[in-house]
Length: 493
Ligand SMILES: [Zn+2]
Image (cartoon, rainbow, N blue to C red; front, side, top):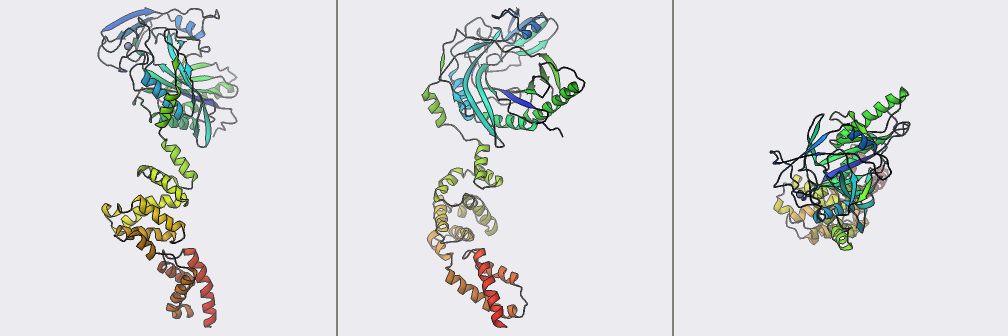
């Protein structure tokens, strides 16, 4: 076992998820095609010195390969925007709204005004030589296993063209993917062990499924950033599924530790995740991405009304509901059942009665199941237990009119057509005096066996509790029996 704290593992993950809308800066469908393209364009890209006067290391690396870029397109589902022959259109409003919803679900603060930026991309996957991206929200977080994982920024950006073929001389890209809206979610390097990284990815994935995102292979991509003490920052691109994240990080830790053991230097680099959890070298880590404002597109405003509208329709995430319920003393199984049987709203309504939450949950989930199974009730009969009945029964329990055990008996009677007030009355809790009288009476019935020592106190107690079920709490009966029986046996000697 590796002590991840000791080796100083720091990791963050980055998720790119395609949104299920038309393209971000034109109205083409976000449609990946398998048939033959009818438009082919050939281009070459040169790395130019940026404003700092230096050629970016990644740009230089790409240029040394001196490749030609071939772009495949479809005249009916791609347009001149993807080919960079026409300026981008206004941002897709639906994509913006989905990005806003995701941001709010990640507890982030949306920006009031934001600007589309150009991020230099030199591998040819963007016909313009840059990727358009805009910051949507900042300072978000999620809670995973009680730990807060920061999500400093959430961006909306355009997906790149996809590689179809690559040789020494050329790279063939298809433009059908270029421009599909992507939400980019990056966590802080708060992750301290490989399993935690997987859970963070799963949680973000769960949140995304509540929004209009594309589903299936290739629609979500996970990258991992990581470093250990004495090592360097490594970016691992394209981990295919969350369960592979753990293994990928573990494998990379082993690789770096082997390097460190041999006193070899670890260079910061970008590596590619393979399907077996291993990684291979992809390219040197590029310098901080240079960003320039996209002057073809006006500033994007996220209005208060848009935020208000989004907040109104915000769903609650299942795992959040479950952990809230667990905090109220309800076990996971019961919590899941409340969701599955769609009784969360009813549960929340009944909480107003100020009855212990666990008893409410059991009453509305386990009790109906139990009486159905034990007394062979039909669904028709069970339907007689309405929310109103639950209110009346739980109120009676709260006011100490009936015991916890009587709840089931009262509900059963209701299913069998007894009016609820009558049922509550029938299983009314005994007063102390009435209870003592009943217990004395039961003792008298077993007088012979008790005095002869043929019946142990424990067996007698079992009988008494059964007989008084629903009319007194087991604890009250036990206390009384223990008090009365000792006295009775003493007196009878
Ligand atoms: Zn287009």
